[in-house]
Image (cartoon, rainbow, N blue to C red):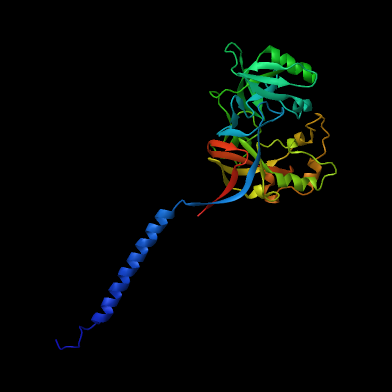
Length: 332
């Protein structure tokens, strides 16, 4: 074959070498990109959005909350020593729940724990101590909470009489949820929740979070200013803008990871004055309805209830403290 000639249909050697080199470089680049994606897959960016200002546990549903400096966040809500959030419930003798919606003066009952006992205090009533560990001989009651069945261990006649006397009501009893009992599934209460979310006697979520700025925004519209006690959050956050918590999908506080599932739809309980136990049935609901209704596309979830605060499910348990930074998780 004469020099300088090529076989018909073939590429010049220089052109062929260039193509081979280019293909090799592309292959190396693709491999490097694959390795980079593999290394960075699942990486998350944390952006601080606020600071924990208050942590509160409400041991007895509808009674006063207990501020704590530090709390364990379990799958079913907050815990500090013997106090667990909404693990005690006032019921009628037939097992139906009783809350401040029916008995507004429940908000005047203070609760704390000491030496293995839950201590109840109320105006013009003698303090009463009941054991956190309910005696085995006490019956287990079948209770009804927002249409779902859940058990509770009866705390005895003495506390039943105490509550009935203070509330001047029909006979009421107090029950305690125990960890071997089956909790209510949040998804059966509100559709947006995940199958893993569960609660004892909470309305519908393990954790409720509200920002200080949201309350400040509301109070600029109120004739009479109100406190955060009207809304009963577990976690109050400072250092963010009003209603910024509505946008938090996943957050980290301490070593706890939580997912914001839905807004908190507000009811008549917010109109109970936490200092007097008097329900006026108007504020702050009327003001909230003037500017905090849901998007029409979400009316099947919230109906006509105004929104204030955000419900969270717990993805990773751990401990939180007042002063902890609150981080929003951004998936990369």
